[in-house]
Length: 524
Image (cartoon, rainbow, N blue to C red; front, side, top):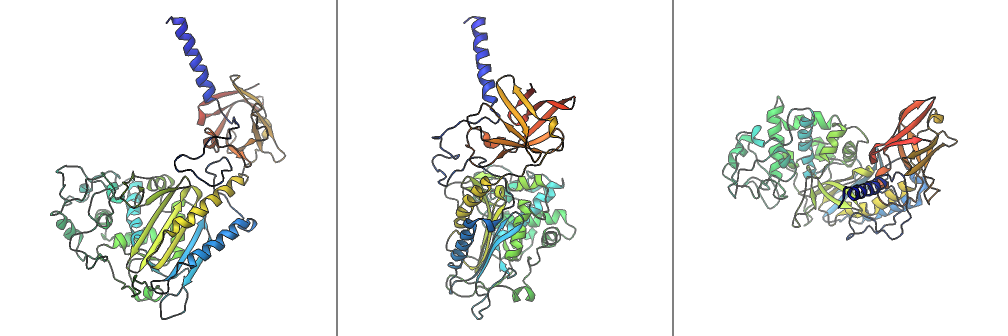
């Protein structure tokens, strides 16, 4: 092939590539493109178009009949789960942004009274306690005091456990926090019966006991649920990073008090027991309330449905939080896909994760003698469903509720106009811009001072984007109105930044769209 021919091919490829990248705010009408990331598990709900993941904003629920029906359905469904013998009481709430938008209290606090539970009725929360140990770890990481991938032996040189395959793979702190350590469910001989875990020794005693044991799996090789891991994590961190070496004191001062969790704690005092719902075993026998002692960081906490609402808001950044945004992003990140024989698809730190309607569901559930609990969040929707039961659950109630809630919130938000900030001096931006004669954009201003961007060549001429004012040179591109076809990467463009440059004679002569690597839309 001659040099001229090669050059011709190169220019042709470059032109095609350039056109492909130039698709800023360009729509094509496609009716037969399947939606969803996984065509084998399609989302059967109505697709009202882009944005695929609409940004949460305030909703006036009184103006939407479908929400009234939904709240009535939740009330009826959760109430139906009460069992006079083995599931005597349930409290639950639904949180959106920074508010509890629905709550329900069902049954009786114990079999000798007709008193119903309320938002301040205390229940054991079991393994939701593990979240406190993990918050301790991530707070230390945020403060630069450790690395998530530090080996456990850096902070516990006496931590030594056998490897069944004879390897020397190190167990890191993040493995301990994410059900990836390979540690057994508990210390040997610590079970008093088939479900109670109590150990009265010290951290030193536990570490010495582990030296004669082996892992059940190689570190990071598979997901394996371990209460032992989180008890070790809490106590090892307390031994190294607190003056009194007391995990419970650290958790109270740095989590419970700062988030104003008024009825959450470890110690089952007389005052706590006085406002506590009685838990019941499947046989209908009242469950004993016991202290887990050394295992406290893994499952000894109690709380209320009101406090769980605050706790979930702290992770969704809609209320008080103890971690910075970057740290919260890391703590909510999936860690590993689990094998088919594990009870969830994805493990987190310490979350159980699944996908539902293309959204990541981040949950921590708990089960301890006589009590079941769950805090289940959809971070991208700022939506959380929480429940506390005095008995064992008979279904995945959070999944059932969220299976209905997600499409309802998503589709409602898609239909709502996104909040677009007006521009103080719109005349500086109004005009006709071209990207190397490959694509054109017009910018105009409406009666509210909002900049409107349109592609005049688009067949869907009624659709447009608003440029929401951030600063004199930076705007956010926001899709306007419902019904956008969610094709290509249009969804990614929603919320992306537009950068204006070259202010000459009171007008900007260029804007860039860094999200799409598009630099040089010139004023004509």
